[in-house]
Image 1 (spheres, one colour):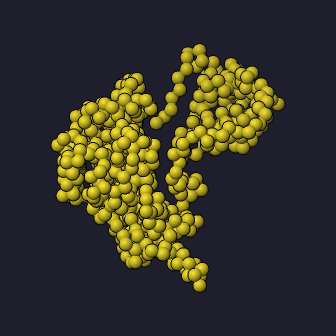
Image 2 (tube, one colour; image 1 turned 90 degrees about the vertical axis):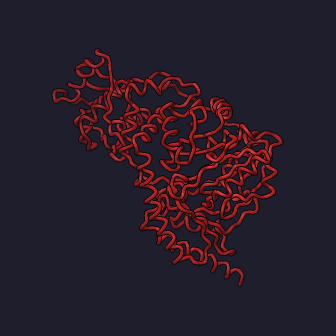
Image 3 (cartoon, helix red, strand yellow; image 1 turned 135 degrees about the vertical axis):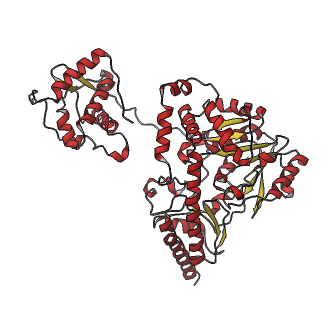
Length: 528
């Protein structure tokens, strides 16, 4: 999309006159216009980073604010800068126009373009405050950072050769052109007039309609508009529901192993957590479950084991919830990637009393950075959740909601899901073969449509040590210990195929096998 800049008539006349002199050959060079090496002062714009003119604007601002280009200096011609940076002259002129509008540059009629004088306050000498003992903040805070930073959060590891971490974005599968088309449409004047207004705590009607018509029916859910809330990803949905339901004296059941962040969210509430064991069919319907007032469960693609709860257990869970007066929070996880023939009706679709709260996310399946999720529940519950959300940020950004609505309505969402499902299926087939070849001793859990594998390694293997060892080799995997709220098993590993190319999978598994052998040999030496 071409960037446009708008000026008043007087500004435009003055700017054009100056630019004519600035870019022409009639202007003689002065000593105050030194032959500066502009490709050293300014970063060369790169097409891979977006708009060249915007990159040049940012580079100019950085150089001016850093005083590498002092005020009053006359800029060389636009042609000279373009040749120095090896970019188009029109790109340079567009950047200069923007900088004039922002006040960084000054256009003088028949003289040229100059770096504008900054406010006096920016040149005033600021004397640093004398250092004293820093305030003891840790003693006043209750930190929520209990979970170790995942390897992917380290900037040095973003270019790892083999990324087997779950939930990683794969640009090669994303329909970039379709998304850009929707974003451009959302930026039309009439659209901005809709989503740009103060919506207070309301969500975008277009997105609510898209979710109701094209996303929820796949899960057997037919919701009214007042039964739906848009959130900043599934994570915000979990947080809002926990804040609403988890009061002092409430017993809340969570799966073990389970979603780590859910345990951390509950730790911020006064509710008592109850650990619920998981088997190959999801959460077990145990006596501990009967003691709960609320239960957070992942019946579809349980995290991290990928287990899918069968229909019989789902019905039994709802029956148990009715008898024991429990509220069930259904947290979906990658269910969009399940084959249509293997889709099991969601708990919400089987609920006849309205005691199930359904949490969903479009972030994992579309793009993690999109941060769009939703909650489906009784209108009374949605109204209360909306009130809590308003105290945080009112509602998710309107432009993102509108663009996503268009992405869904135009069929791009379902087309993308089909493409991703096919890609994931090919990669998982390759992973299954590689594991059978290189790691036959590992116990592997993987259900249809999941992009990750849950592996139980031999008892003498420490997955945390193994993960650190592989990270140094550029191979990113997750130790399973972090998913346990109690009685953690140290020999479990989670690996995923959401980002790694199919051609690299076999080599990655072979490297995991080699690291396991190395760890075992090191232990044998110590024992000897």
